[in-house]
Length: 228
Image 1 (cartoon, rainbow, N blue to C red):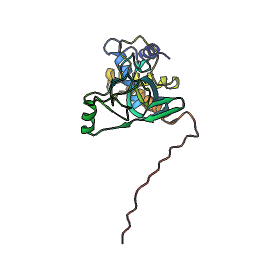
Image 2 (image 1 turned 45 degrees about the horizontal axis):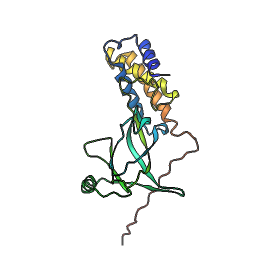
Image 3 (image 1 turned 90 degrees about the horizontal axis):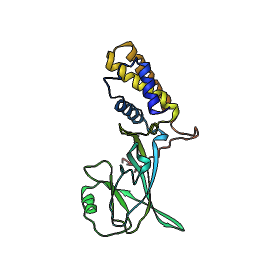
Image 4 (image 1 turned 60 degrees about the vertical axis):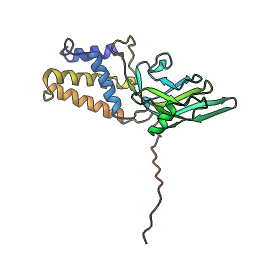
């Protein structure tokens, strides 16, 4: 389904109760985000590729020119940031995330170009990458978890992130919110739509990965303290 089809169907199924009084485009975005907040579904994982610019330490993840694949998305969390230091033979280096304020201030004021070895998010921002000033135009890769963030005035009618088998859940989510606004949360129609929406999310959560052989493994290593 497309964005338009989803909104139109939700409108029809709710007797158009919210068509003239609610911003359905914004409501649609909120439902997409609510679904994705529930779980780190495998289809929320994204990879973006860009070239660093020599002596340029900041990169805006919302820049359509630099990151066209993120036009309807926002990076919620970075899990890996890797640069290619040599294409042949292939050699890579992973950047380390830093959080210490003193280190961040050092990076903000660093003027010496070098091979970046660390990164952070610029304080006061949720989307500006800060790295050591690059001494070359490194081919860079970021892997992370994304959230849908389609602009209300977008002309792209595709549904970001959520796969086709989850579009019915988006419809149910819109219906639940429209009925709740129109009749209140205790209304039978609102309660039925909310229950259908929650069931749809549970169905999506039942398939964490694209391959059923995937198994989560947790390794815990800690020093033992012996009492004498």
